[in-house]
Length: 356
Image (cartoon, rainbow, N blue to C red; front, side, top):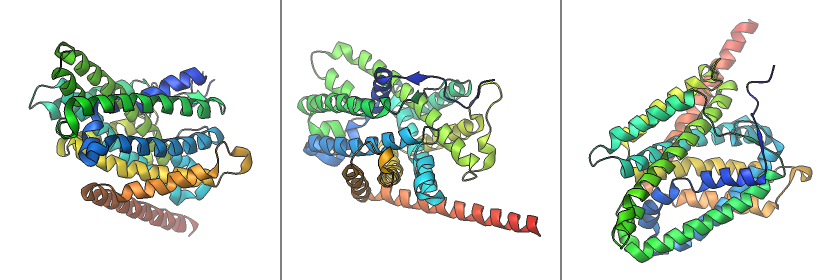
């Protein structure tokens, strides 16, 4: 009998590039330029270059680690293997809280383009609920990759993504200017609607809605797998480690995450969700860069200088986040540390009672 936890298929470089493009571009072209323009103004293109450099370092570190540890859980597993349980936990916690906020941002982006005025939050919550049900029935986007396909695909997909974002950024700045880009949650629709292609606005809105739903679907699946890995190691409540006997998905984790995403949608705005997400994800990649730096020569695919630059860039970017986003991030990580300390203390007491 085949292992129900094994990845179902293997992909070549072309397939990996396509999946990478979907993950990197996703719905970001419809949502990310608003907060980026608000923060960088006319320096948006400079910010894009910096982001591309940091993303390359982070992606190569993750690719190098994934080639050596081809298992679900991402940097939570890599951190545990290379740096110890606490480092893995910090990475996993950062991924869960950061990507949960990202999922809320994708749901809000979908609603910004698809919902009538005043109905954005209910529509976003409904989208989360529907996609959680879809994922519950076993629809995933995961796949196994060879050691050769991962690094090759990372460079190609990232290069194409940077070109796409640069073209769109130049177009938006020329059509709207940085202030108008920062002032609308639907910058692409606004740019097209103000020119001779106003007829294409419904097409852009439809494309944005579909892209947002695709990104949200992938985020829920990825979050559930990391949550499952953490629960199996008792870094999250163990009942979240359950796998549905028929659909072979971490159904309890997906249900719990869907509820949490809906709560964020109900209380946060798009810009706040993206800022908070950035804090958690940057900590996640900080651990990834440090873990990749410690890999031995036989597992090394990229020079160590990339990991050093990636780690330093993550720290600098965390320090430049809006105070509210950084403050909430610090509080959430403090809460995560306290929770793990309490769980370790309970485990030690239970073990002591068992020996007695």
